[in-house]
Length: 149
Image (cartoon, rainbow, N blue to C red; front, side, top):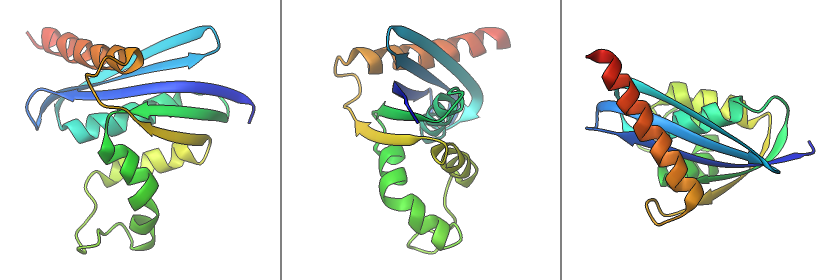
């Protein structure tokens, strides 16, 4: 692994559940790439997870990644809960099924390809990368809703 990439991810949802979107800003040297997507019926947590998955999937080869998210759910899930969930056959400490297991498994698969350092940033606090990802997520929702009319 030699390439180093900085990633900002964000998810948004109008209603929870409701229409949701995700946005990603990838930065490598002088190059930037934006990605976005949306679903009609989803949750904010699912969109936050989808953003991280899509960001890592977009990398063609293994990279060192500095990933910035405003989602404690995603960051803590990866750093604190994921290993225990896998060991306990995808049950929480309370023995309930892990929510969003499909996305956690997909994220886990992507994580095996990269060396990721996770960073939490406060949302809507003026961080340019986070604000860009948030704008992408909301534009994705707007685009999806305009297609429905």
